[in-house]
Image 1 (tube, rainbow, N blue to C red):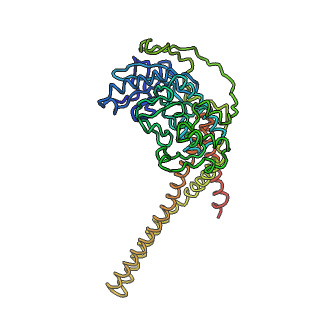
Image 2: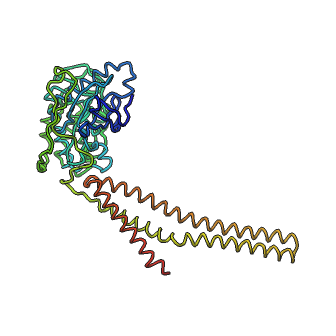
Image 3: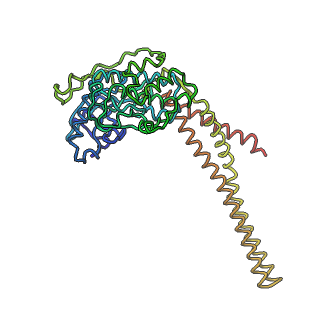
Length: 462
């Protein structure tokens, strides 16, 4: 069972908008509350629903919600509600308007050391809160860290693998391994785990952020593969950060910093400029939960609504992609020139092609008459063949010229679509959709006009 757009949950308290993402066990939907707020609702996916272990998975899902509710931190995704929509447990979470650090690095390239450290400090402090609650996240990686679009802030998500732990005590654990980010002890069911387990994954995440490369797996390293120091891959990394990453990713747990606080001390804390505080223009809203109070430790308050898609905060930076806009401008100039060029020649080509075919036909008739009068049937056949060849050649040339012009227009149109798409995404990071539309519209209108004028002023006079 997968819910469709418009599906109402809890008597209309939540309305499904669309699917946000699917994982190995869960599915997350974008939904709106009855008061119009955006939230994310997570539940188990269809594969789990149809499995024999459905009851066990449901219990683990409920446990995840309770574990996540224990950890209250600005850089941890917050749980607003937990309810049972027969037969599924559903967890209502803060909707984060952003993208994963993995997709951000894939799209924008590696982060500067200062930016990477800012995000790592935020996630490190979030993990300290997790550890203080006696939990391990066990799956820290770039795909489990969201970066908000409206401010430079990272949020730790996906606590499905989180487990309670006793420090340095051997326990039996389920298999949760993200290759390249999981330490060696996570590849074995019975191995001691501690805060140093999350330290390895966080250091590996920093490695990826500053190099763009997923480090080799702990098993491969244990078999002899060398971990290339990040400074050798990207020379702009400081020695201090380089050493902190290598120490945090030590194969032996005893060689790593034993706590997140200890590892963070190895890093230079970045200077962060705090934006001015804006008082919310809404009242505190209490969301009731059908879960018994004994199961959730306290009443959950939703005092800060999730950010709305239409109102990103663009006060921090205004990044204008001038290079991309110039390319858009030049490409539209070419488009304008082609449009001006095609407005007359295509019409001329069509008329001239028809005239040429008519003349070729008339010439063929004349040749046929002359051939019949002078040389007889044999010459008539030869003349007819020549006339047909001339007519076919004229048609082929006319069609080829038309196709060449049309293909040129198509190629330029595709190029414009691709460039505008990339530029739009970059503009949306700093401007609202309306302002982005105005920027691109003005760019296209102006450059199309320039291309048309260039043709009329230079080429059309010849």
